[in-house]
Length: 618
Figure 1 (tube, rainbow, N blue to C red):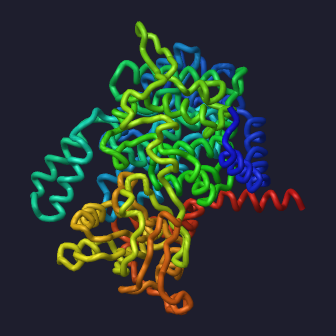
Figure 2 (figure 1 turned 90 degrees about the horizontal axis):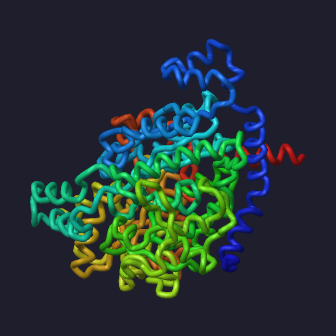
Figure 3 (figure 1 turned 30 degrees about the vertical axis):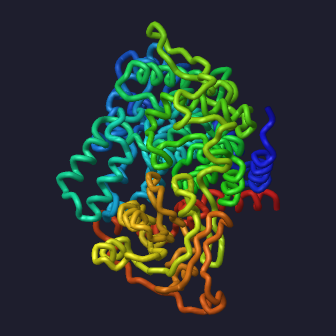
């Protein structure tokens, strides 16, 4: 079925805008492929270093030029519950590769930090920048040029985007992403949120809060709410970089291991030495990016991807804007209700039909491009399936026609909302994004006086002092990427939620980020230009009347606009927030980072391609 007009038009717009940058990227890809893998060209000493730790059988294969070798890039550590299962994946992959006549080596590891641990702490200031560090670490891992394809082991917030940006720098290689799956369901997410609010009000103590949290985050696997980590998994599947049905299978299960073995076989099957050559630089094109955006809207996914998908696209020579995202949002129906957009978790989503059901629905309604390349082979119709084990053999069967739970996963015909979960807000304060899928209709338009804060701690102190029992819009500024690295401000959700529950009209405006788990309080985030650049957000004062309106998609200062713009912007001495917990090492990132609407990245990927393209044309 042809795609609907909006999907077609946005895709064409991205392609046209990216003509020079995409061409330059593909030229680089072709040049890298022509040079080939250097194992056969290495000196004996170089090659011996490359396989010194391998078994004799693997050495014999690697010493020749015909055997295929997979490079594994892993984000394993055993502090992150989501990444702990990866401890055993390299052995599974190596065994499967040998059985298929190839080899596999751990090419390198990348850091993986947990936003849940660092939330509200100094370490959170490194979180967004860790994406670019991971991309660079991925490049280092693959730079030995010993590999015919690569497999990427990553789950959480910045890890998957960083791995994919790094993989796209080696766009001539096939890239198969391998998930570990969510932990089994713990206590309901709405119960966890209730206890957090009680703690914010001083009605329960730390012991009760810790007991609740430990029952929610209780075992290996991804956190089961639909935040950035699980949005990552949705994206990798709908963009064709996972196997079908792989995203939300629990860790430590026979099906999970069978999918990992099959992913290994696919990584060997799609190299340049075979007939199914599928390099990652060809998989990630404008159609795949649009498919990812459609999936994000249809599931009410994380706002962090309004940054990540722009940076990922730029790494493939594609230029994507917030306007592209907003236009798609208006045309894509909301098909999933997963916390914070509902009370279910991703295990319930998977049981209701999961990704196969979602992809089939969106294909049949013309919201997804089918004619894309995938690591599984063929187009996206092959992803409208469920992965199962039948007599110990991996099988892919058509997804059910009816949802197993229509309150969690529904059809396009009976969509929860006619439009998606993310919006672009514009106005005289700047551009920002907002997630509305979890915001009740009565809270989607807020007009109230501003209360200005220069830190999240300032807002929390005011809440504890009882100063916020009224209608207000909290402006938390100097939180942008250039200021302090754009930390998530999810710790503000319980306090603002309490005030909302007391009947006050409250909202948040910030140049920082919110967690993918944030939801019910309207939050205009990623405000650009940010305060440190003297943007209008830096000129707001206590008492200014503001209007956050998701019906007209505006964020507005309601006073005299000329008077606002004539004000001297506020400043803040943030030197104390630029050191400690390693933050002093990231001064270069803060100095070079792009604005939020360009991906908040320290890489000038699109700019580099544009400059080279202009030189080529001239």
